[in-house]
Image (cartoon, rainbow, N blue to C red; front, side, top):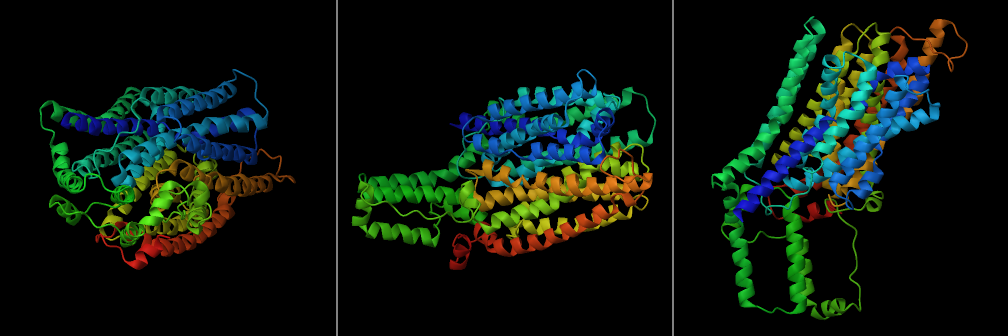
Length: 612
């Protein structure tokens, strides 16, 4: 038993390491700023057409309802295979067009091809997020921060490969996006799989292991920032960037040290984690044995009530953090008290034996109640909840305005006189990673210590985002550097907060569908703010500069701060509306977090009512 448990613990950490590699290769959509100028010149697009191509990219990157529907029906490795195939076909076709291997396709076909290529990310995200959150149910925020963080950091990883190995060649970049992520997913797909839970108690070493992974992530981000700045500011031999890239790969392999350490302890006969778990679970097993001895053949209705009690207790235990006081009670052989309403319900069922017998025989159906906050919702049940739509609109305002700046980063830098935007892409990517990692870890810490809703940090990020958009609108010297860092941080926080918040409010059973529906907010925001507003305003300003009457057909380049000024004023207003929505959501769900994460095992009546 000890050997088997240790192997399971090692397996889920191997799966997390493989998931990190998948996520590090899932940020291909962030490279749009690198190859979009080539698309614009080869295919002779204006800015509005190019921005709509970016919208197609965002739709593919975020609309993953099919992946969410299938995630409970097919294994994770199949999801990864589908994603790898989508990326290979989409980016492979883009490479054929840009490199001149085939004739340019009609515009509508290019929209579909771009959408298919970026849609690979939804299959990657769904497979690894759902699997790893189920493998580590007590560390959801941390897991989401790490995995979603690596999606953001992948742009910096790709940038390093682009500048050191691909010699800033957009054609080679598209070829790499065709082959690289596909190869990584095929190599990792057998390791990303669900692992049976090793008891209901959190692994004592899980926290320290996550601290190690987080430290590796932060050091990797700092390393990428340092080498990108070095390569930007200094002229160096071609061999040195290749060495930098090799060290980066070593950092990506570092999380494998955890399962290696676990397996080495098993070989040495240590097995400390499982002994502690067995020690905690022994009293519970003893209680069960004593109960069975006292009444070996309980009546049917009592057995049903006991089974329901155990199932409800298991769900409640898996959803609530295990604090030291609760663990002490378990170690002393005391049964942790269920919620008051659950106990009352079970007592009523035992008293009304005749009703239970009738229900058991099927003559009367047990009335069904709607799930409460924190329980497992189906998508159609979540769609009628106000909290769901407020969270959706909050995400729409924050991510929609953020992705507009990211999609137009190449043209923003060009308008402000920068010849190369590589450094800005890297800054956004690294800050995006830190925002996702920091947002997940910070919110995880404060919900467990003070039950502070995660959305508090989302509101703070949106306040900062207002000033970022105003900073971009001013176009003062140096603001693009500072703005890129702050934009990446705020953009990343949205993902690390939205994902665990949705899982806490609506459960994990159908989380694949719920998560992929919420992410539709990003392409909707991209379509409205980037495809319509930013593209239209840019072409209008370019037409004015060139003295043209029609801005719809212009392919001119706009230079100056005025090119995106009005766009960012609009973005600042939308972000301010997002702050208002987030404040309303935080007020609505504040008692939910009190009920789910408070230290006392006895919820009050008001806490229970807040879950409805």
